[in-house]
Image 1 (tube, rainbow, N blue to C red):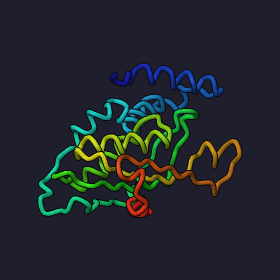
Image 2: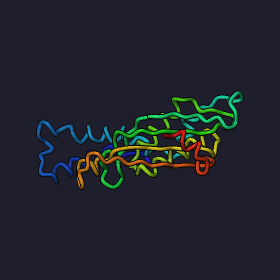
Image 3: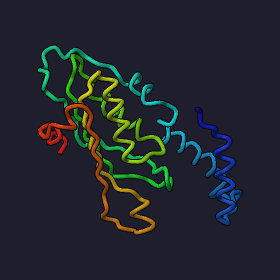
Length: 188
């Protein structure tokens, strides 16, 4: 479903009014358009299914010279997202991804692009890890995928409990990553 920029601008203007602001004052006149453009950018992943993301970033290369048990690991991929419960920023997020190739390897930049696009949705960190794992699995043809994510959530750090030090860690394991500790250890 495509985003409706005009509807976003209309509702952002209404939100400003509900906050007691004058959306026609100089500093706010262009705010509805700027916020709508920001949402289009930071929530771009909403426009795509996991399957479509796998197709977009699924460029692979032959892995004939890579052994069956040799894992590809990429660590410290930075992303941010927005919590679907509060539309609050999830930030300082680092993603670690590992998979065991099945004859083909994914271009390294594609791993980071998959993580970025999956994060550009109203999201839960738990679902984000699952989405990334599913996309990597489809793009590589491998059922053996692990994803860990560590991140801060402004719904915890800036409001509510206001615990600035709290970080959330999630782990998603598919295939052999579910049962083999040595593979899980690769993501530490």
